[in-house]
Length: 380
Image (cartoon, rainbow, N blue to C red):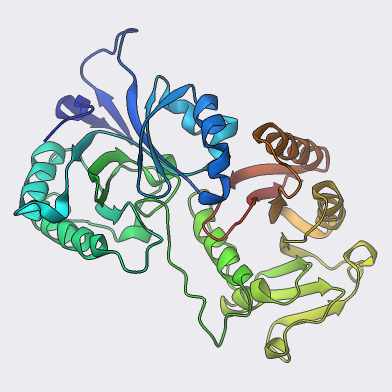
């Protein structure tokens, strides 16, 4: 196997951090990193890579970019971070054609165990580089490779966790396999920006409960929120702005939440009479909750100008309990450049902070289009 970065052979795990026993000099070569950029923002790829101070090595799959980064920390703390769905520092790579290689699964599993055994992992998770493909032969290959690898790691993973049971700050081995080969690295889910290899969580949009794509969007947003804090408890009361036709409303109700939904247009007929739902047919700008009504969380997926929508969010956050959660879809329609999109975000954060709201996280999700999901909380 060709090794891109071989620090792991000398590593030791200290708490939740991987620390090399060999000092890193200022002349250390650039680190190989794999990032995922959604097709929605692929036209910004050159700007994103430049913002990271990185150089492109090659494209992998449909949405993956293999980079050389001089400072991998910029992946999570730069303007580019919002566009990066998932990232992985490359600790090991095997450029090859897995489907044409005899005994690939056994060879790859043995190599993974030899390299990463003894690194105090909480789990091993293997996905595919073409996650969006419906007929992907690498899905079964990834599943079989994970099964064989876990057999070898059995003694080390006595307290093994399933993918959504991972501790967000503890190290896991994430691997991606595709026609270009096998790419692996140790990261915590929080560092990688997701629990799954590649960051994708499949969410069914089949009837009868699915009313619109927005249902999958809020489901994925709540899944992502678990990287940063616990979800609102069952029975929590949500205020939803611009709820029509009710895709998000339906998903929240399915989870046992209560919802007060506001929109000028009616909700889907399938929501009529649903337990826990209170619908107010009104313009959000003219809506005022009943005196002393308080909500646990607020959701806004309204179209239109960001600042206009955010103004209503800030106004109605007065009815949130202290520490209340806000999920705000930051639309970027009309912004045609990387700089303009970033300006929309920074202006939104400035307004939110002035209104007593603090950012928890901001990311682009699978079910987002040209938009970001902004997670906020009420500070007082």
